[in-house]
Length: 438
Figure 1 (cartoon, helix red, strand yellow):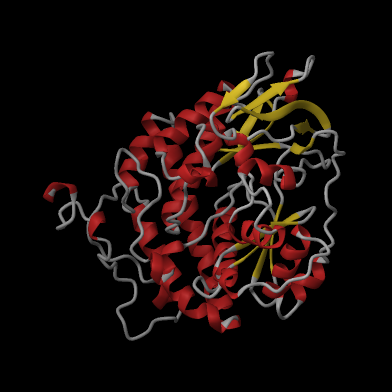
Figure 2 (cartoon, helix red, strand yellow):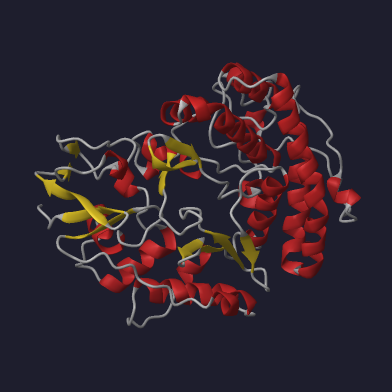
């Protein structure tokens, strides 16, 4: 099937064309494109076309998924082209980063956001308002009611300045959860975009990090695309892969700083038990090949605080292992692969631990303010208590009794608070389901 070509723009200037030819996808730069206007770090400017059997991973990176994709399919009808190529043609002008894709000859005009941020965040039904914004933003002028099935999914959209996120019944208080985890990152000295929580606690607004201080678009590429993987393969990676890709694209002069940032980000994920830290949740931002750095922290939350993920283990393995108590493995990783000293790594652990303790009172305060968050808050504190032990330099898989953060905040209940449950049999190397027993 042959489709109409697409024009690819970088910072508002056309740089190439994307076509589908004979079942393959072909991207070709126009003549005399400047090197700094490359579309992707994987696709530097050259005369030869880039040919892939599927849509190139970079172009797949920001395709709509989840609620957004379901809304588009529902409104466009059964005969619409909702292939990856077709979705790119529909949505490519409004994505994260500096690359925009539009049908051949079309003007690059971003859909101006009609969101009244202050009004949305102050409303008593911010989640419903966000869903209406999402629907009208995708299908302007098309009426329709949001199906109940969509209300069981996580929804994300963006305005000119913010990324807006909400959760639903199966993940209550998701916005508050992520807001607090990002606050831990901020208190630990990591680069975190500005965040705002709606008054009713249902929506999190995260400032876009694909803009420079003067408003210019920055290039953004997640590690899944940098590995050349389709988004569906975002779990097919390792922490060692993160180091290799960082070393490949970050200049030697900037590597040490970014290595420490990567190490601290990994500590954060283990400390708050973010079980979904896959390849798409790590990214690089850049203006040119000589100016590449790790993206600010995003998409971090305490996933194991929810019953459906209570037994989940880390998304990516380190040295072939996916266990929470990885402090010792992380120290080896940081020294051998990132070139960090014991002092640097020890300081990072102390900063992260202190940040968790500083934010812990906020968990209690928000639990008092939002009753629906209280049970999640209790489980978050249990997860954080375990996480603080997990990142200690000598931490190894096994049972231990972490400090009872929940009790310290006066949020204990009749069940033993702060005691680590051996809920995941795969995390115990001596357990009945371990590699030793197979």
